[in-house]
Amino acid sequence: MRIGVLGPLRVVADGQETGIGGARLRVLLTRLALGVGGVVSPTALSEALWPEDGPAHPDTALHSLATRLRRTLPEPHALRSEPEGYRLALPPEAVDAVRFERLAIQGRGALRDGHPEDAAQRLQEALSLWRGAPLADTAHLPFAVPAVTRLERIRLGVREDLIAAELGSSDATERIDHLAELGELIADHPLRERLRELLVAALAADGRRGEALTAHEEYRRLLAAQLGTVPGKSMRALHQRLLGGEKGSSPGF
Image (tube, rainbow, N blue to C red):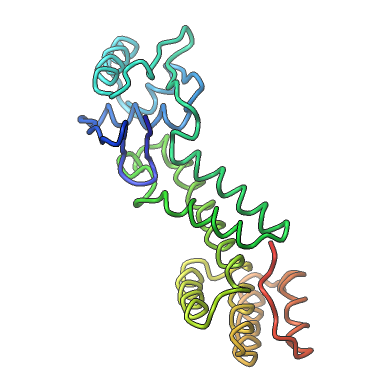
């Protein structure tokens, strides 16, 4: 059985998808999936299910919901009652969010070690797991907010790593795609230095040295105006290479 939370909640076993009816059952399964393999306490589950006004007897209500969820799951035995709470007894990578994070770590490690093709493969696989907004069914609830923020932050890093991995070997069409994607990401994160550095490197790799220098200058002025600071060491080093007439390359981080 596999559980997907990188989008609307999804449960799949033997190639068949099982619908989980009822908002509270989806909340319960999502919270358990975030702690897959470990025991989640009744208090934590109750806070996820009833963030404001809970039932008079939350333990009884939780037991009832867990029983209903167990009957709904294609592998009922996966939801186990423990003395300390409830546990989703599945391999961690049965939850797409866990697999996503592990692939992200592997991809970044391969990029750092100088294996961009291996990095790109793992990072592409990581991004392919996303089907929409993370925890789409429960993102509005307090327990989900930190998880959503964390997953979105990692996803941005994966997108940056993938651009860095592909930049050195991409053809002209792919470079244009990278530039378009970087433009969209920078619009959402104007002060994020790595995006700016990737933009400068992508322009340089495309033979557009003048535009790369302009992009660097625009970022330098933005930092000075909004934060009163200057670009970091890696960005400054890339700028010096451009001033020296080097074509530039993708940052290997």
